[in-house]
Image 1 (cartoon, rainbow, N blue to C red):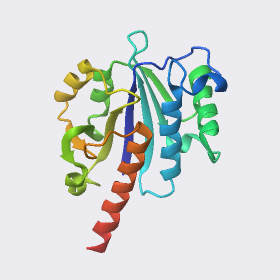
Image 2: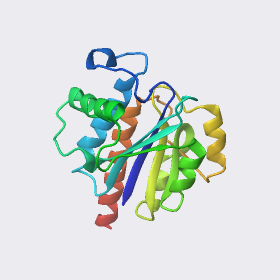
Image 3: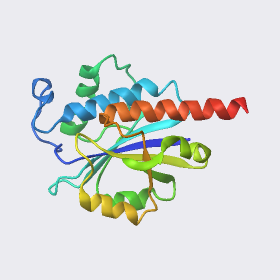
Image 4: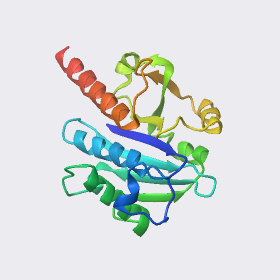
Length: 197
């Protein structure tokens, strides 16, 4: 099963000068995406799926999609500093093996994924996540969320054209990295309950 988390960032920029010291709480809020990638790495041996993080840089001057499969990092990530160094290298050096960097609009990105993925948009007003249990293993799953902000209004409008299923983790607001952990936990529980039947 293919599972992707598409995280849209309004602030992160490709190729801008960054350092470890400038990351935490910095203007581009790369720390948010660093925690997302670290949490995803922690699930790679626990979930029966090919995981990937897709970072969409939605700043008008960017419109760039960076697809990072969990296999792209061969070294074990111990902490957020490891994850940050890995992402810094991608954002400053450019292409690495297995990582895809494409200039793309949000709409074009979704269009390129429609054959392989069913889309889920995480929003407090969606269906309870448990309602999608019977859709696991049907096809790839792509979960769409914002980084430190919700996705942009024009992106929400685009979702309507792609038969997006809005799902909810409840009324509580979570950090993007926590959302990834909760969704992965749920997917694992869906798989284990289907084996028990």
